[in-house]
Image (tube, rainbow, N blue to C red; front, side):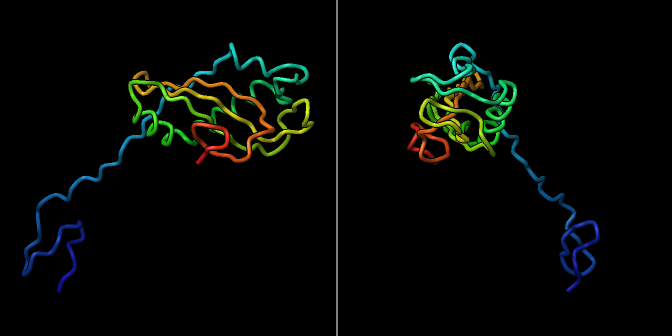
Length: 151
């Protein structure tokens, strides 16, 4: 049995090849939401030292925002899928991740490398607003509705 034609047409028998064009490969375009930092609440964690109620970042605001935006971008498909299910309401979620070194402290913990991002995803507006802080109480990393209910 002869092989397919060099241009990819399927062999039909004898000297005949299928002239129909192969179906096009469809690659879905990922949905990407705009990401906006909520400074009103988020900036409360960029303080000189932690308080009883607020942990404090020990890295620069620029580095903390880059780290949080990267974590959100890495989970964008999951966030979009979940936000789509609850549209037109906004989705309130928590994303907990680990940094590679110390990023902050709390009154009880001098060196924190885990952080929490609180985010709201709006499918209708195609947007995510967020703020975050060093978190010495989260038991796991992941994305979900609560600090210790993550996937």
